[in-house]
Length: 313
Image 1 (cartoon, rainbow, N blue to C red):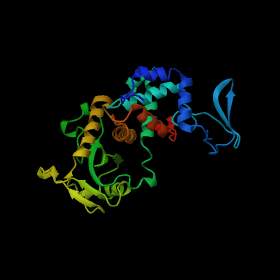
Image 2 (tube, rainbow, N blue to C red):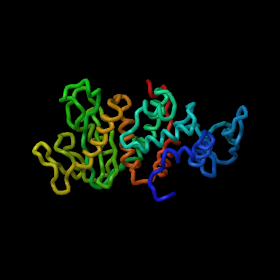
Image 3 (cartoon, rainbow, N blue to C red):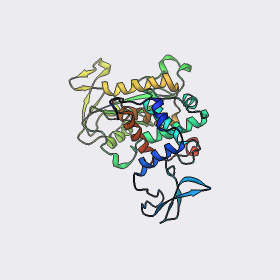
Image 4 (cartoon, one colour):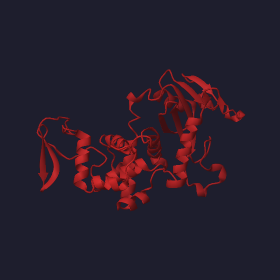
Protein backbone atom coordinates (compact mmCIF):
# COMPACT_ATOMS: atom_id res chain seq x y z
CA UNK A 1 0.00 0.00 0.00
CA UNK A 2 1.52 3.37 -0.99
CA UNK A 3 1.31 6.71 0.81
CA UNK A 4 -1.81 7.81 -1.06
CA UNK A 5 -5.10 7.30 0.73
CA UNK A 6 -7.03 6.52 -2.42
CA UNK A 7 -6.90 4.41 -5.56
CA UNK A 8 -7.89 5.45 -9.05
CA UNK A 9 -10.66 3.89 -11.09
CA UNK A 10 -7.99 2.64 -13.50
CA UNK A 11 -6.12 0.91 -10.66
CA UNK A 12 -9.36 -0.75 -9.61
CA UNK A 13 -9.93 -1.94 -13.18
CA UNK A 14 -6.40 -3.36 -13.30
CA UNK A 15 -7.03 -5.34 -10.11
CA UNK A 16 -10.52 -6.56 -11.09
CA UNK A 17 -10.69 -6.86 -14.88
CA UNK A 18 -13.15 -9.76 -14.83
CA UNK A 19 -15.47 -12.00 -12.81
CA UNK A 20 -12.74 -14.47 -11.86
CA UNK A 21 -10.46 -11.86 -10.28
CA UNK A 22 -13.37 -10.43 -8.29
CA UNK A 23 -14.46 -13.90 -7.18
CA UNK A 24 -11.00 -14.70 -5.81
CA UNK A 25 -10.91 -11.42 -3.89
CA UNK A 26 -14.35 -12.00 -2.36
CA UNK A 27 -13.54 -15.61 -1.41
CA UNK A 28 -10.39 -14.44 0.37
CA UNK A 29 -12.19 -11.61 2.16
CA UNK A 30 -15.10 -13.81 3.21
CA UNK A 31 -13.30 -16.97 4.25
CA UNK A 32 -9.54 -16.46 4.20
CA UNK A 33 -7.83 -19.87 4.24
CA UNK A 34 -10.83 -21.77 5.66
CA UNK A 35 -14.07 -21.95 3.66
CA UNK A 36 -17.18 -22.09 5.85
CA UNK A 37 -20.49 -23.54 4.69
CA UNK A 38 -23.15 -20.77 4.83
CA UNK A 39 -25.83 -23.39 5.52
CA UNK A 40 -24.46 -25.45 8.42
CA UNK A 41 -21.51 -23.31 9.51
CA UNK A 42 -19.00 -26.18 9.27
CA UNK A 43 -15.49 -25.56 7.92
CA UNK A 44 -14.39 -29.18 7.57
CA UNK A 45 -14.93 -31.14 4.34
CA UNK A 46 -15.59 -28.18 2.05
CA UNK A 47 -14.79 -29.13 -1.53
CA UNK A 48 -14.43 -27.11 -4.72
CA UNK A 49 -16.71 -28.51 -7.42
CA UNK A 50 -17.92 -27.60 -10.89
CA UNK A 51 -21.51 -27.18 -11.99
CA UNK A 52 -22.15 -27.63 -15.71
CA UNK A 53 -18.43 -27.17 -16.25
CA UNK A 54 -18.40 -23.87 -14.36
CA UNK A 55 -15.96 -23.33 -11.49
CA UNK A 56 -16.54 -21.30 -8.33
CA UNK A 57 -18.85 -23.75 -6.55
CA UNK A 58 -18.31 -25.46 -3.21
CA UNK A 59 -19.94 -28.58 -1.80
CA UNK A 60 -20.24 -29.17 1.93
CA UNK A 61 -19.26 -32.70 2.95
CA UNK A 62 -21.26 -32.29 6.16
CA UNK A 63 -24.70 -31.14 4.96
CA UNK A 64 -24.35 -31.82 1.23
CA UNK A 65 -25.36 -28.29 0.17
CA UNK A 66 -23.73 -26.61 -2.82
CA UNK A 67 -22.95 -22.89 -2.64
CA UNK A 68 -20.77 -20.06 -3.97
CA UNK A 69 -19.22 -16.95 -2.47
CA UNK A 70 -22.48 -15.15 -3.33
CA UNK A 71 -24.65 -17.41 -1.15
CA UNK A 72 -26.17 -15.62 1.83
CA UNK A 73 -24.80 -12.22 0.79
CA UNK A 74 -26.12 -9.17 -1.03
CA UNK A 75 -24.74 -10.72 -4.24
CA UNK A 76 -27.00 -13.79 -4.06
CA UNK A 77 -29.32 -14.29 -7.04
CA UNK A 78 -27.83 -11.27 -8.78
CA UNK A 79 -26.82 -11.76 -12.39
CA UNK A 80 -24.50 -8.74 -12.25
CA UNK A 81 -20.84 -9.80 -12.59
CA UNK A 82 -18.92 -9.56 -9.33
CA UNK A 83 -16.35 -7.10 -10.68
CA UNK A 84 -19.21 -4.71 -11.49
CA UNK A 85 -20.43 -5.10 -7.92
CA UNK A 86 -16.96 -4.14 -6.66
CA UNK A 87 -16.98 -1.08 -8.92
CA UNK A 88 -20.37 -0.12 -7.43
CA UNK A 89 -18.95 -0.45 -3.91
CA UNK A 90 -16.00 1.72 -4.92
CA UNK A 91 -18.29 4.44 -6.27
CA UNK A 92 -20.44 4.41 -3.12
CA UNK A 93 -17.38 4.61 -0.88
CA UNK A 94 -15.62 7.39 -2.82
CA UNK A 95 -18.63 9.58 -3.72
CA UNK A 96 -18.90 12.08 -0.88
CA UNK A 97 -22.52 12.99 -1.68
CA UNK A 98 -23.57 9.52 -2.82
CA UNK A 99 -24.34 8.27 -6.32
CA UNK A 100 -27.70 8.00 -8.04
CA UNK A 101 -28.97 4.81 -9.66
CA UNK A 102 -29.01 6.59 -13.02
CA UNK A 103 -25.35 7.55 -12.71
CA UNK A 104 -24.33 4.08 -11.51
CA UNK A 105 -26.17 2.47 -14.43
CA UNK A 106 -24.08 4.55 -16.85
CA UNK A 107 -20.80 3.90 -15.03
CA UNK A 108 -21.01 0.09 -14.94
CA UNK A 109 -23.31 -0.65 -17.89
CA UNK A 110 -26.48 -1.98 -16.26
CA UNK A 111 -30.10 -0.83 -16.37
CA UNK A 112 -31.29 1.89 -13.99
CA UNK A 113 -33.56 -0.67 -12.32
CA UNK A 114 -30.63 -3.01 -11.68
CA UNK A 115 -28.47 -0.13 -10.42
CA UNK A 116 -31.25 0.93 -8.02
CA UNK A 117 -31.46 -2.61 -6.64
CA UNK A 118 -27.68 -2.80 -6.24
CA UNK A 119 -27.55 0.50 -4.38
CA UNK A 120 -30.36 -0.48 -2.03
CA UNK A 121 -28.52 -3.69 -1.20
CA UNK A 122 -25.29 -1.80 -0.55
CA UNK A 123 -27.17 0.66 1.67
CA UNK A 124 -28.59 -2.30 3.57
CA UNK A 125 -25.00 -3.36 4.27
CA UNK A 126 -24.23 0.16 5.53
CA UNK A 127 -26.74 -0.39 8.33
CA UNK A 128 -24.10 -2.33 10.33
CA UNK A 129 -26.83 -4.12 12.32
CA UNK A 130 -27.63 -1.15 14.56
CA UNK A 131 -31.07 -2.64 15.15
CA UNK A 132 -29.61 -5.61 17.01
CA UNK A 133 -30.14 -5.73 20.77
CA UNK A 134 -26.41 -6.02 21.42
CA UNK A 135 -25.84 -2.55 19.99
CA UNK A 136 -27.04 -0.93 23.21
CA UNK A 137 -24.55 1.74 24.23
CA UNK A 138 -23.22 2.20 20.68
CA UNK A 139 -22.63 5.89 21.48
CA UNK A 140 -20.97 7.16 24.65
CA UNK A 141 -19.36 10.22 26.19
CA UNK A 142 -20.82 13.56 25.13
CA UNK A 143 -23.56 12.81 22.59
CA UNK A 144 -25.41 15.45 20.59
CA UNK A 145 -28.94 14.68 19.40
CA UNK A 146 -31.16 16.57 16.99
CA UNK A 147 -34.13 15.89 14.74
CA UNK A 148 -34.80 16.73 11.13
CA UNK A 149 -37.77 16.25 8.81
CA UNK A 150 -37.20 14.80 5.35
CA UNK A 151 -39.51 14.02 2.45
CA UNK A 152 -41.11 14.92 -0.83
CA UNK A 153 -39.87 16.67 -3.94
CA UNK A 154 -38.57 20.07 -2.99
CA UNK A 155 -39.46 21.75 -6.28
CA UNK A 156 -43.15 21.07 -5.69
CA UNK A 157 -43.23 22.55 -2.20
CA UNK A 158 -43.79 25.93 -0.66
CA UNK A 159 -40.61 27.42 0.82
CA UNK A 160 -41.90 26.83 4.34
CA UNK A 161 -42.05 23.07 3.71
CA UNK A 162 -38.63 22.55 2.18
CA UNK A 163 -36.02 20.32 3.82
CA UNK A 164 -34.74 21.85 7.03
CA UNK A 165 -34.23 21.09 10.67
CA UNK A 166 -37.54 21.78 12.29
CA UNK A 167 -40.65 20.17 13.68
CA UNK A 168 -44.24 19.67 12.73
CA UNK A 169 -43.70 19.65 8.96
CA UNK A 170 -46.72 17.93 7.42
CA UNK A 171 -45.93 15.22 4.87
CA UNK A 172 -42.35 14.71 5.98
CA UNK A 173 -40.66 11.91 7.90
CA UNK A 174 -38.82 12.49 11.17
CA UNK A 175 -35.22 11.37 11.60
CA UNK A 176 -33.43 11.46 14.95
CA UNK A 177 -29.69 11.90 14.66
CA UNK A 178 -27.09 11.25 17.34
CA UNK A 179 -23.40 12.09 17.18
CA UNK A 180 -20.80 11.37 19.82
CA UNK A 181 -18.12 14.01 20.19
CA UNK A 182 -15.65 11.17 19.60
CA UNK A 183 -17.03 11.04 16.06
CA UNK A 184 -19.49 8.15 15.79
CA UNK A 185 -22.81 8.96 14.08
CA UNK A 186 -26.12 7.12 14.14
CA UNK A 187 -29.52 8.22 12.79
CA UNK A 188 -32.89 6.47 12.92
CA UNK A 189 -36.13 7.15 11.09
CA UNK A 190 -38.86 7.54 13.72
CA UNK A 191 -42.68 7.57 13.42
CA UNK A 192 -43.04 10.77 15.47
CA UNK A 193 -41.14 13.10 17.77
CA UNK A 194 -43.07 12.30 20.92
CA UNK A 195 -41.14 12.01 24.16
CA UNK A 196 -41.76 8.26 24.41
CA UNK A 197 -40.45 7.61 20.89
CA UNK A 198 -37.37 9.79 21.26
CA UNK A 199 -36.51 8.37 24.69
CA UNK A 200 -36.83 4.82 23.37
CA UNK A 201 -34.22 5.50 20.67
CA UNK A 202 -31.87 7.36 23.01
CA UNK A 203 -32.09 4.64 25.65
CA UNK A 204 -31.23 1.97 23.09
CA UNK A 205 -28.17 3.55 21.51
CA UNK A 206 -26.58 5.70 24.23
CA UNK A 207 -24.57 4.27 27.10
CA UNK A 208 -26.10 5.05 30.48
CA UNK A 209 -23.28 7.39 31.53
CA UNK A 210 -23.53 9.55 28.38
CA UNK A 211 -23.94 13.31 28.55
CA UNK A 212 -26.83 14.20 26.23
CA UNK A 213 -26.70 17.61 24.52
CA UNK A 214 -29.81 18.84 22.65
CA UNK A 215 -31.82 21.92 21.89
CA UNK A 216 -34.82 22.86 24.00
CA UNK A 217 -37.42 20.60 22.35
CA UNK A 218 -39.74 18.95 24.88
CA UNK A 219 -39.16 15.41 23.57
CA UNK A 220 -35.70 15.32 25.20
CA UNK A 221 -36.86 16.35 28.66
CA UNK A 222 -36.86 13.99 31.64
CA UNK A 223 -34.45 11.53 30.03
CA UNK A 224 -32.27 9.23 32.12
CA UNK A 225 -29.11 10.97 30.95
CA UNK A 226 -27.13 13.94 32.21
CA UNK A 227 -28.89 16.42 29.93
CA UNK A 228 -27.39 19.72 28.73
CA UNK A 229 -29.65 22.08 26.76
CA UNK A 230 -28.78 24.76 24.20
CA UNK A 231 -31.71 27.16 23.82
CA UNK A 232 -31.85 27.88 20.09
CA UNK A 233 -35.11 29.81 20.39
CA UNK A 234 -33.26 32.32 22.57
CA UNK A 235 -30.46 32.43 19.97
CA UNK A 236 -28.15 30.45 22.25
CA UNK A 237 -25.97 28.11 20.21
CA UNK A 238 -23.00 27.42 22.49
CA UNK A 239 -23.01 27.17 26.27
CA UNK A 240 -19.60 26.00 27.41
CA UNK A 241 -19.24 22.43 26.17
CA UNK A 242 -22.95 22.34 25.28
CA UNK A 243 -23.63 22.77 21.56
CA UNK A 244 -25.14 20.73 18.74
CA UNK A 245 -22.77 21.83 15.97
CA UNK A 246 -21.62 18.26 15.33
CA UNK A 247 -25.02 16.72 14.64
CA UNK A 248 -26.09 19.79 12.67
CA UNK A 249 -23.11 19.22 10.36
CA UNK A 250 -24.47 15.71 9.74
CA UNK A 251 -27.73 17.22 8.49
CA UNK A 252 -25.70 19.51 6.22
CA UNK A 253 -24.09 16.46 4.59
CA UNK A 254 -27.48 14.76 4.24
CA UNK A 255 -28.99 17.86 2.61
CA UNK A 256 -26.16 18.12 0.09
CA UNK A 257 -26.88 14.57 -1.00
CA UNK A 258 -30.61 15.24 -1.06
CA UNK A 259 -30.35 18.35 -3.22
CA UNK A 260 -27.37 17.41 -5.35
CA UNK A 261 -27.79 13.69 -6.01
CA UNK A 262 -31.09 12.09 -5.05
CA UNK A 263 -33.51 15.06 -5.12
CA UNK A 264 -36.04 13.04 -3.13
CA UNK A 265 -36.13 10.08 -0.76
CA UNK A 266 -38.86 7.44 -0.64
CA UNK A 267 -40.20 7.24 2.92
CA UNK A 268 -40.18 3.45 2.61
CA UNK A 269 -36.45 3.35 1.87
CA UNK A 270 -35.39 6.45 3.80
CA UNK A 271 -33.61 4.51 6.56
CA UNK A 272 -31.26 2.96 4.00
CA UNK A 273 -30.32 6.36 2.60
CA UNK A 274 -29.74 7.64 6.13
CA UNK A 275 -27.60 4.56 6.87
CA UNK A 276 -25.49 5.28 3.80
CA UNK A 277 -24.73 8.82 4.94
CA UNK A 278 -24.03 7.68 8.52
CA UNK A 279 -21.69 4.98 7.21
CA UNK A 280 -19.84 7.51 5.08
CA UNK A 281 -19.30 9.70 8.15
CA UNK A 282 -18.32 6.77 10.38
CA UNK A 283 -16.29 4.36 8.27
CA UNK A 284 -16.17 6.04 4.88
CA UNK A 285 -13.93 8.84 6.12
CA UNK A 286 -11.56 10.08 3.40
CA UNK A 287 -8.72 9.98 5.94
CA UNK A 288 -9.02 6.18 5.85
CA UNK A 289 -7.46 4.42 2.86
CA UNK A 290 -9.91 3.47 0.11
CA UNK A 291 -8.92 -0.21 0.32
CA UNK A 292 -9.67 -0.24 4.05
CA UNK A 293 -13.05 1.38 3.45
CA UNK A 294 -13.84 -1.08 0.67
CA UNK A 295 -12.86 -4.07 2.81
CA UNK A 296 -14.94 -2.76 5.71
CA UNK A 297 -18.12 -2.35 3.67
CA UNK A 298 -17.52 -5.63 1.84
CA UNK A 299 -17.35 -7.46 5.18
CA UNK A 300 -20.82 -6.15 5.99
CA UNK A 301 -22.08 -7.32 2.59
CA UNK A 302 -21.23 -10.92 3.46
CA UNK A 303 -23.75 -10.95 6.31
CA UNK A 304 -26.49 -8.99 4.53
CA UNK A 305 -29.28 -10.38 2.40
CA UNK A 306 -32.33 -8.58 1.01
CA UNK A 307 -34.44 -9.62 -1.98
CA UNK A 308 -36.03 -7.52 -4.69
CA UNK A 309 -39.46 -8.61 -3.45
CA UNK A 310 -38.63 -7.34 0.06
CA UNK A 311 -37.59 -3.99 -1.37
CA UNK A 312 -40.70 -3.60 -3.50
CA UNK A 313 -43.34 -4.91 -1.07
